[in-house]
Image 1 (tube, rainbow, N blue to C red):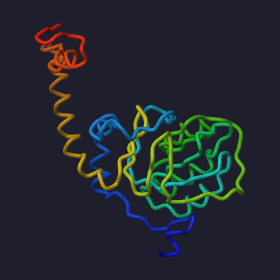
Image 2 (image 1 turned 90 degrees about the vertical axis):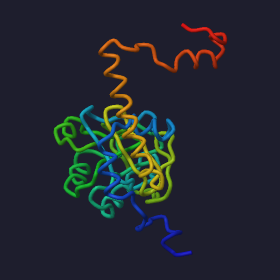
Image 3 (image 1 turned 180 degrees about the vertical axis):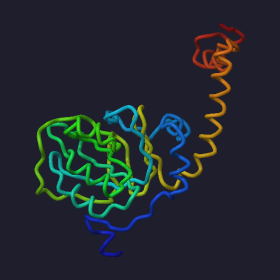
Length: 230
C-alpha cells in the first residue's frame, strides 16, 4: 500500500469525466436525484442565491468544526472545475470561508463550494456570483491550526461523498452521485425529462389530470379495494 494511500492528504484520485459533468450539468438536481434512487441529496445545504448552479467532480475536505486550515491547503491542490465539498460537521457557529478565500477559488477556476458549515461576507459573495452552497452564514471567523484530511470519503449533509464523485447543485440544493454510477444515469435522466415534459403538456392541456398510476398505488396501500377507483 502506497504512502499516499495512507496519508491524511491524498493528491491523486480518479475524477468523474468532464464529458459526464458537461452532460449532467444540463439536468436539475431533482432529476438526477430521482433517477439515482431518490438518494444523494444533502440536507440543510442550500445556495446563497437561487440562480447559482454547480456541476463538477468532488474534491473532499474534512475539517474539525470551526477550523479551516485544511480548506486553505485544499485550495492549493484542487484543479480547475473541481468542487470543494467540505465536511464542516454541520457546525454554523462560525464561518469557514468568506470573500477572500472564495474570490481566490474563482481566480483558481474551481467549480464551486459545497460546505456543510457556514460562510460569511454574504453581500460580497452574492455580487461575486461564484457558486456557494452552505448550511448557513455567520459573521464569526474560524481558527486555522487543527489538522484534518483531504480527499478521503466524507459525510456532508448526511450523504457519503468520495473524491471524484459527481456533484450537481441548483436552487433546490445539492445531489451527489457516485463516480462509477454517474454515466449510467444520464440516459435515465434524459428519459425522465421527456416523460415529465409530456406529463406537463397534458396537465396544461387539462388532459389526464389524475396520474395513471394513482388508483393502483392506492389499492396497493389498502386505501382502495380491489376493483375500486377514485
